[in-house]
Image 1: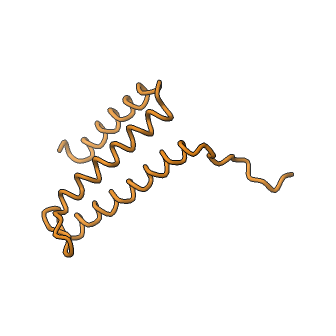
Image 2 (image 1 turned 90 degrees about the vertical axis):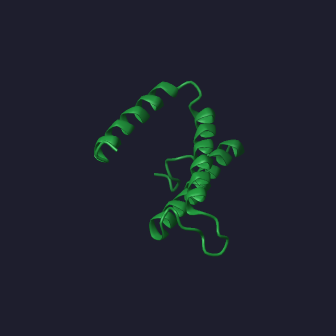
Length: 100
């Protein structure tokens, strides 16, 4: 028996950068979404005056960019299964939202 875990962490610096940046952007999106829930989407950040809606929009765009780059890096020739799952998920969520 070995004392080492059965997994092998990523060591390629470019792979690590892709996933690390995506995780960072996801965290920023979480913060923006939480601020919209707490204060309201049409309110502003108290210190900077930045509208919550604009902050949310910017963070959504940053996450989409990170997702696109991550897909290019790790799933360059596998877009169909991803697109199929996105389509199915959107259908389920629209039904769950009540058709909105």
